[in-house]
Every structure is written in C-alpha cells, then in structure tokens.
Image 1 (cartoon, rainbow, N blue to C red):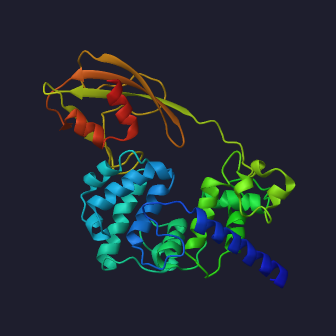
Image 2 (cartoon, rainbow, N blue to C red):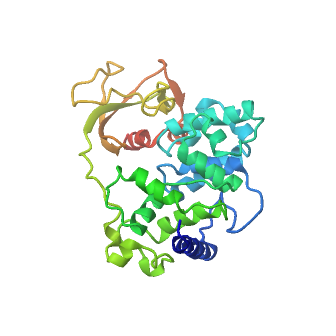
Length: 342
C-alpha cells in the first residue's frame, strides 16, 4: 500500500471513529465507544443472532426479556426447547432459535460456559456463521475481524461506487470492507460502520450532509449516492393458500399442535392447519359445522400466504390445549393473526 493510500485509510478511519464517539447509538447490549470495560460475549452473541433479519427496535424487547430470564449462556443452555421457541415467537426465522439453543448447549458443555475468543474457534460452534463469528470476535474480544452486514455493504457500495449489483457484489463489498480493518479499536470499528449505515447512510435518501465520510465517498462525489448499492430485480414472490383451524373447547381453551422439528416454523406450537400450496379443497380435522372467520395474509421470505380461518368447537383430541392468552403468547405471528381473526 502506498503511503498516500495508507494515509487516506487512516484519515477515513479517524473521521468515522470520531463521529462514532459523538453519535453512537445507545443499545442494550453495547458498551460506550472507546470503553475498555469487559463485555459479556453471551450478550454480544445473543444480540447478533436476534438482529439477523430483524430491526433493532423489534429485537430489543426480546433481548431484554431473554437476558432477564436467562442471564448466562448456561442458563439458556438449560432451557426446554418448547420454552425457548415460545419466548422466540414473533422474531421470525425460527431456525435461528434452534441454532441458538444448540450453540448455547455446546458452549456450556464443551467450553465450560465460556465463549471461545477467536473467529476460527467461534466458527466451530453450531449455528455460528461467518458474520456472527466475526461480530463476536470483534465486539466481545476486540479482535480485528471483518464484520459485514447489510448496513456495511451499503456503506461500501457508496464509498467505492461499486457498479456490480447485489447479491453478486457481496464478495467485492466484503473485500473492500476488509481493507479498512485494523487492530486499532477493533470492536468499535464495525459498530461505527453499522451505526453509520443505520442512521446516516440509509437506504433510499442518505443523509450525506451529516456523514463524516463524504470526502472519501465516490458516490457522493459523483452526485448519486442514492443509486447505490445496485440491486438485481427480485423475482415475483409466489402466492400460497391454505386453511387454519381454530378449535376451542367448552372452557374457551385453544387447540395447538407442535409443528415438525424441521421445516417452516419448525418446533413451534401452532394452530392446526392444512398444507400450504395450491388453492384446493383441504381435509379438515373434524366432521363438524365450521364457521368462516375470514382470511389472513402473511408474507414469508420466499412466498406470500393467504389463510382461510375456520372455527369450531372440539374436546380432547391429540392437541395441546392452552388458554387464549397463553396460546397467543406462544404462537408465531401468522397464527396470532389467525387467532385474532377468529
């Protein structure tokens, strides 16, 4: 690296870290900028898993609830699967919850309740991918690691005016981000980048007038930062249909079923439901008079779902019976919508 490029990198890092010192978000799992106080890797890991595919305002109450109920990774490792899945309900992407429990149990049993301190060791834990390993290594252990989420990708795409559209641009954006990583303030650096992307270098209209990096930003210099990152047009999301059956007994309890461990919403409690596919007739669980309670719509990552809600009275059967309040607390969002409709 030439001395001129090296100086630019140093100046860019200094500008962003100075900005972070003044404008860092106050988050439940974070220590203040520049702090050398120890931080619990459990809290960093838990927050990073929750924040995948989830916004910070949505994840924060879950983080606070989890750390109040299970203050250490050993506490979490001892939780029953069903209790964990119920506590996770509403965060979506339920495979993350299963991976969360598998990882907690591995740390408790194989590492004496202590998270390993290097990126390579963290990658060996179940359910821990490249992003999470890098984030925990950097933020919890102050190791220089290349932490690249959607916010960082957006900053890199604009900073270097990358013409390759996402998702094909991901390797290039990761390489560019790696070029800015140094051992200095290794934990603060990725958080500064993520905060910049979340609050200033936003999707849509970036707040360039508040950005500390405009002197180095190629997209800003060209006058078109909002055009980056380039994106490949998404294919139309397919539409699926089905029925969901709300069965209640004389006491007003709701019938629930445990969904198969693998597959969508795996291991969660749910309402009895048909397969979700073409809009065809469905075999219902009871031969009785069903009342139509309307239709609910829900969007998953890869498809949209339209569920017709039908209600009936039932007793016994191979169900988990819960009060309406307890059922609502335990159900994923799509089933909460159905229960509310009923």
